[in-house]
Length: 187
Image 1 (spheres, one colour):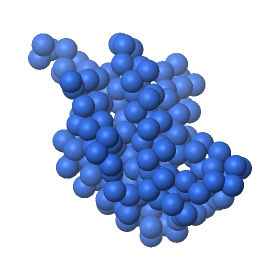
Image 2 (cartoon, rainbow, N blue to C red):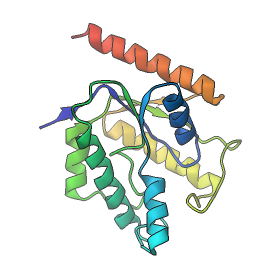
Image 3 (spheres, rainbow, N blue to C red):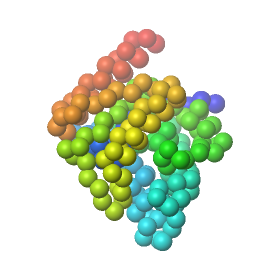
Image 4 (cartoon, rainbow, N blue to C red):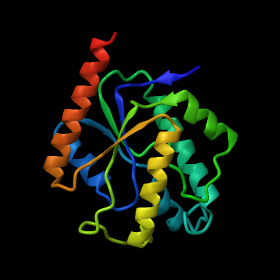
């Protein structure tokens, strides 16, 4: 059974592009938002001395984040209000991650709004830390892979402008409102 949630809007993209800052801003404006699992998993694995880290075992890392993202989606399946997700089921452990059959099934059967927000790599705001070890050129490569992945999964990526968080939020809310209005008028 396919669970299609047109009220679930996904933010995806490479590291350090401003997804979390934008999600926090939208939450402060009263929007319902879901935090990403990736950075939390990295913190937990590192603190526990685990190996499910993108630089140690990308497969274990990708599977753990995918399982958690699936559980979050499923726990919210009855939510009817608009929700913004900082990453989700389509986000994986990276280019070397090979989705197992259960993840491929989740990609097919748990669907966000087809409009997906993708902040592009932006050198001005990019920074590395203990959880984000990629160099900027690697972030650009991940961005390109994510765009291809979105298209392959039937999503329509909307590239966010290189602008202030306030302007990005206004852009996102305008697009989300347009998409929602169009969906309501076609039913």
